[in-house]
Structure formats: C-alpha cells, structure tokens
Length: 270
Image 1 (cartoon, rainbow, N blue to C red):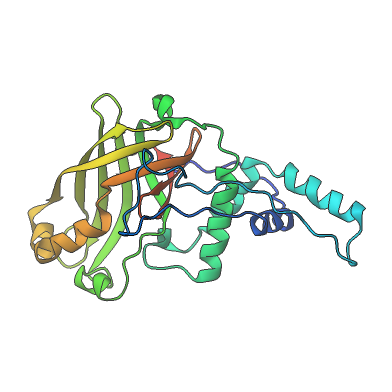
Image 2: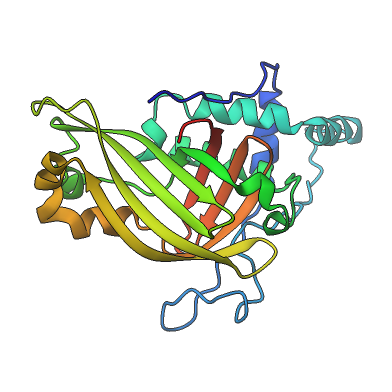
C-alpha cells in the first residue's frame, strides 16, 4: 500500500518567536479524583486539552518597552502554517515517538502542539463530522514501546512497525485502528493488527471510544504475537475518552483520558 502524506507548504518560520511563545504557554492537567480515575466531562469542569493562559512578561533592565512590544507583535504574527512547518521538522527522525524521545525534543514538540491548540480553527469538531471522517495517519504519539515490552513484541530486529492508521466511519460510528508490520525471515512483506471500536459523541470536542474486536493478519503473524496479544492490545487499544483539541483539513491533534497526545495527518491510504 502506498500513502500520500500531506505536508504543509514550505514557509520561513520564525523560530525565535515560536520558541518564546512556547515558553510563555501554560498547561492545565486533566482533573484526577482521589481514586486515580480521570473524570468525564459530566464530572469534571476542566478540559483535557491545555488551556491557553497568557503569561505576563516582566520588564527587566535589559529590555526596553519598545523591545517588548516588538516581541509581542512577533508572537502574534506566528501563523498556523509556520507552527505546522516547525512541527513537521521537529518530528523528523523520531519514528513517531513510539520508541521514546529525548526530553528536550519532547518538550519542543509539545510546545508546538500547544501553540496549534491555541489556534484551533475548529473549536467544536464533533459538530463538523465531515472533517473527522476518513483515514488518518499517526505521525506522533506520547505512547511508547520501550524496554522489555519492545523485546517481547519482537520490535527490535525481527519485526518492524510500519504505518499506524486510523480509519473513521462517521455513518457507522466506528473507528478501525490499523498497525502495519513488516516481518523479516518469514517471507512476509507485511501484516497488520486491526482494532475495531465504536465511538459516540459526548461533547462538542470529545468522543467516548469502546473496544469491539481485534484481529491479526496473516496467520503467520498471529503465531508470533499470540503469546503477547494482551500486551499488544494494552498498548494500542484506543478505548476511553478522546478529545480532539485541534482539527483542520489535513491535521488532527487529540488527547486521551490518560494524558497521551496524538498527532495525525490526513491520508489517502485505506
């Protein structure tokens, strides 16, 4: 299968201004009750996504009022296209973050994600289902497969993790998560792990996802993973609350009830 990646148009981004902006944004964490359970929107007055709260810049002897004004104007002039260009560049060479990301790189990516969320052109995404439906390709996630988990799943040398796709059928209220694999040594060019789930809208920004079934194809691949199916499903099962915190025609950002961040781009692959 081939996939057409939708990249943002080339544009000279203001790195310095973006860096300052990410340093001035604050995040509100999901509200957790005393039992450690993430509360639903009916119980929780806070949203899962970061709230954009301005930080007052204190005047120092090293900066004049005119310099501060220029800095503020530069921050306001940063466009979504520039932020997306910086984000795509930051995501280069990290394999979607699945096998871990250095802390400084992770902070850079999440800072850019927060900038996008503060400029969300679709504040009520579940009311614009035409933008949500179709196939999306994961390009970044804070979900990781590390250490013994990676070894047990054979994801070091024997099995390569390919594309991670999300196919959303609005009419049926279903979502299919597809993990593609390349297995060396079994004459298999590819295989896949499919997780089928249902979803229902619970707010203007959120859906509740319910697991339905999962399958691995072909059978040879099932023989590899059958001892660790629970581990594989535990890592990639999408079940639970999912909030869409940014959505445009070709990029989607979401956060689940566990605080994980997902960045997906629209794909023609299915």
